[in-house]
Image 1: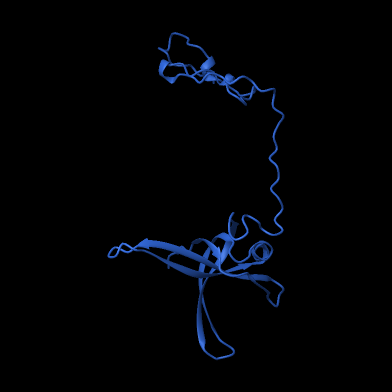
Image 2: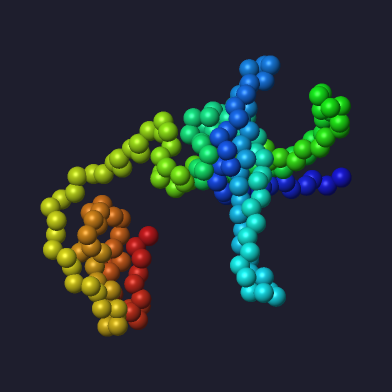
Length: 184
């Protein structure tokens, strides 16, 4: 038997708040439903039609904790995982049932949704580390690419002085017919 491929990628909004439970062995499990909509134009009538699928997703341990802390109804989410089909006997009715669901392997919280980019306890993004920049330089003249000269990179704003090589400053040795000889 050959090895198969089972990969699911869903992007949609949560149809309801996550259902969080614990297994007898104290593992956290979250069940979410992702509403995924699509639209198309009817070829006969020209009307725009739409359909929404409600796809059950199961997340375990760390991903279940992420669902519990940050996801609420209406929040957009990207789910990567695998499709799983399982069966069981319903204890209440005695009926044999089949369940198809996505087992989440990765969850990405997306901006937007009902509360405009708020994710509950999500800490604010860290400010980016920036180095102190030297005093602002005058804006350089944009190089004219039509005359063969591309200008010097050293005139560019935020150019690092320790940049290893600026090819425009090598000069023409005359023997290569205009080609620049790279010294390495």
